[in-house]
Image (cartoon, rainbow, N blue to C red):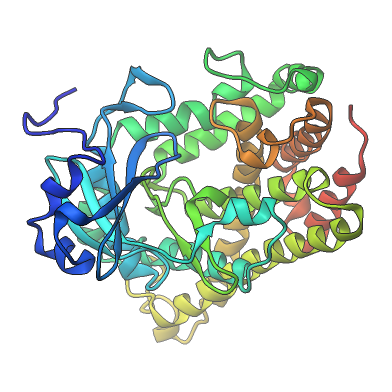
Length: 420
C-alpha cells in the first residue's frame, strides 16, 4: 500500500497549522488559526473527523487513516478511499442538490477534505433511538436514492461519460472488498471478526445451515459485483444521515462505487426496519405503538417517493442511451410500461438487499447502536431475532412483499413473534 511521502495523520494540535493558510477554509472559519477551536469527533469505523470553529463559522475536516480505525493497524486500508469519497460527494451534490454536504477544499496527498458543517443536525440513528420524528424523512431519502440512481446511470448520462466514471471508480478496490465480505459473505459463516449476541446463537446457527438462503445471497453478490448501473452511496444507513426535525442530509459516501440501482434503497429501508424492531427496548409502552407506526410510514414513503421521483426523471431527463425516446415516444409509443417494469425489478432487488443488510448488522463486524445499546442481552437477542427472520424472508421471497401493505404486515407480524 503506497502512501504519499508528505502524508501525515492530523490531530487537534496540528490541524490549524495545516489548514490556516487555505483561503477556502480560513475565510469560512475566521479569526487567527491559532485561536481556532478544534474538536475530534470521529466516532465512525474508518476515519478522523474534526469540527473546526472560529469567529465566522465552522467546518468539518475528514481525513482517511491508512488502516481501519475500529480495528487498528492490523487491518491496513488505502488512504485513496478519501479521493473516491470526495468524487462521490461532488457527484451527489450535482445529482441530488441540497442533500449532500458542500465540499470546500480537497487535499489529495493528505487524503482529506473540508466540507460544510451541518448544524443543528444530528445523526439520524440517535434521533430514532431517542424517539424523535423527522418531517419528510422517507420522502427525502426516497428522492435522494431515485435522483442519484437515475442521474448516475445511462438513463441520463452519455455512454462515454458513464463509462469514464465507471473506470475512475474501478480504482477503488479496497472499499468494495469490505462490502463484499462484511455484507454478503461474513454473516453466513463463522468469519473471524464476526460477533453476535450470545442468546441469538440458535437463530444464527439455523440461518447458517440454510443453503438455499446462502445461494440467494451469493446470487445477489454476483449482481452487486458485476453490475455498474449507477454510482452508489454504498453505505446508506441511519448513521450516514443527519437531520433536524425538518431537514435531512446524507453524508459519508466513503463506500461509493458503481453498482445496482436497488442497493442504496435496500440499505436505507433495512436500517429503518432495524430501528423499528429495536423500539421495544427504547420506548415506554404508551408511546411504542405510535412511534413504530411512524417508522412504517417512513418506509412506505421512502418506496413511494423513490418511484414517483424516478418516474418524473424518466419523463423529463431520459437523455442517455437506455430506453431512448427515438424508440418510444418519437414512434408514438409510450415508455411507461418499460419504466414500471424497471421499477418492479428495482423494488424486488431492494427488498432482497434489505434483508441482507438486516443480517449483517447483527451478525458481522459493524453493528447498529439500535440493538447494541440494549444492555439486557436476552431482550436484545429477542428483538434481533425478529429482525433476522424478517431479513431471511425478504431474501427468499421478495416478490411476495413488493406490495407495501404486505411488507408492513410482515414487519408487524414479526414484531409480535416470540422467537426466543
